[in-house]
Amino acid sequence: MEKLTDNISPKVFISYSHDSGEHKDWVLKLATDLQHHGVNVILDQWDVRLGDDLPFFMEQGLSSSNLVLCICSDAYTEKANANKGGVGYEKKIITADLMTKSSANYIIPIKRNNKIDKIPTFFGATLYIDFNDDSKYFDNYRTLLARIYNEDIKLKPALGNNPFKTKELSSKISLGLSLGTVNFQDPALSGKVSFDYSKNDGDFLIGNGEYAFTTHWSTAGMGCIYCYRDKVRRIGYNPSFKDFPSRDSITKFDFSSRCRTINEGQIVILENQNNKFAAIKVTKIFKNVNDFGHLLNFEYQIYRDF
Image (cartoon, rainbow, N blue to C red; front, top):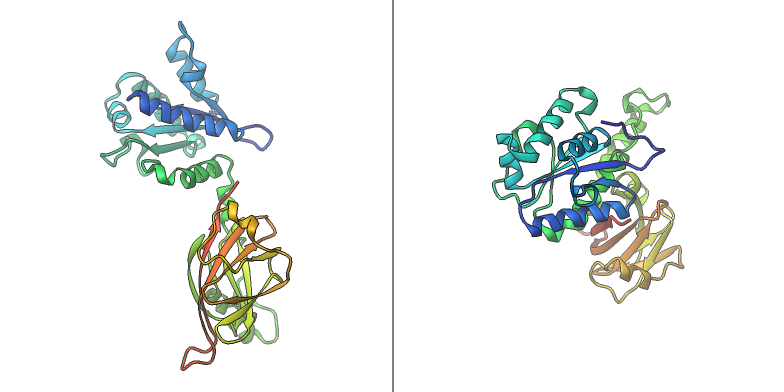
C-alpha cells in the first residue's frame, strides 16, 4: 500500500458488497463526489471491464492505493467475517496489510445500510464514519475528505508553553492569566456560551484550528453589546436575521464596519483569516445585575464549508 505524499493526488480503493442496485448507486455517488474533489478513486464500476481478472484487480487496486474505504453494510460485514466472495478475498489482503504497522492507519471503515450496528471483526477497535443517515451526508463527507487529505490534524491546537515555568517577574499573575483562559474558549464547532465579557479583554475563542474565531466584545446600552472585528478578518450584520442564516444567505450581511451594536436576539457573522465563517446569536446580556456581573450569553454555529 502506497504512502500518501503532498505531491500527488490521494488514491483510494473502495471495497464494498453488491447488496442492491440502490447500494451500488450510493457507492457510485460517494466515489464521484471524491473524484470531483481531487481524489483518485479505484472503483470496480469504473475500472473493471468484461473479461478482466477480478482477483488481479483487487490485488493491484489495494496495493497501489494510499487509503482503503470499506463500505460496511450488513452484507459486507457478514461476508467479511465468513471469508465469502470478493469481500472475503479483499479482507484477506487487507488483513495482511493490517499486520504491518505501516498500513494500520490506511483502512477507513464506513457504515452504510448497516442495521446490525457492527463492522467486520478484523477491524478491531478501528474508528469508523457512519453514513447511515442521509441527512448528515454533507458533514460526514466533509469529515471523510478531511481525513483523506490529512486536514483533520490541523484542527488540533498548537502546543503551548508550560504556564508554571514562566520567566516573568510577576509569575503568579502570569500563571493566573494563563490558566484563566480556559474559561474563555470553546473548541466545539457549535454550542452555547456564557461568559463575563468584562474579563479577558472581552475576548472569547470559539472553534479550533483553521475554524477558530476570537470574538471581541464590550459594553454598549441596555439590551445590546458592541462586537468588533479587531480579532477576526470581518464581521457582518443584518438586523432582519433572527436565526442562523444558510451559507448562501451570508452574502446578505453588511461587512463594511469595524464595530457593530448587536441587540439581544440578533445575529452577527464573523469571517476569520482562513476565510471561514461563524454565525453568533446574542441571546442575553447582563450588566451589573445581582451576582451576574457583565454576562454575555450567545449561541454560535461555525460553517464547515469547502
